[in-house]
Image (tube, rainbow, N blue to C red; front, side, top):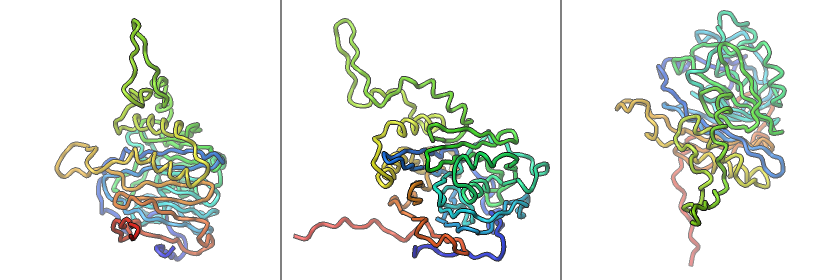
Length: 371
């Protein structure tokens, strides 16, 4: 709690300000985010994801209290017409030091994240959409987590809502996003803006990556029905027995590259095959191990190989325990998982609490017992 500071506003706070406008210019693609859910033996749900980008997001941990005044973002960096007060408190991570969530969980156990959706995101025309029901691409998750308690509630309130195509001033582009939402019952939802409308999918597996569309990823699973976490049995040919080399033969052929379709397959494989844990904390650690498999070090993927090319990498990993309403995060430079207990905060506070993700830490020494 001591690392958290307070943000104070006078009146409503638009979900995006102009303080950092124009500082980044045209943003490089970010197409490597991976998300998933796992369930504990006691029924608890844990949601995890990685965040990849080619420039620093300067994310902070934030806690938005109940009744905090928020507003959508309008064109040209002006406040939008849609305003609301947070019905539920929420904790998670922001970007660019702004009071909007790119990942998080609320006090009722509704969690979700924003993931990149390049070449497929198609937003409504801001000039034609109803301003009172319009959200900028970066508004949507904050709107969902501060207003609703379940996936069913989110789904029921999407009618008439629009996500409009406007530039994010800091990025200098209209960012292509889609959204994953999960609740404490294990229900999951995918929302994708395509051709100006919101396409909504029930997500039976709780996993999501990036492009193409979610329905394409689901169809693509049919190409891999032979994969299994169980080793392939020995093959007998002409009286000879041919056994595999070591463990993992049932997964021979699973794509190992970092493209979104391949990551979708792999993260689903992990989510459905890992050993279920008794409860939340053990499941958080299990989720961390799954997410580690999708960590991208700087330079592993490159757009064009040029000397000045921004390199996409895993800036942070976020994990939400939907039962305890605890959010966990570790960063590229600090691989120690940090806990934020939403229910330990004053949920009726008047200000947003923030904390940096870059504590001045060196590797702690390993203590040896004294002789």
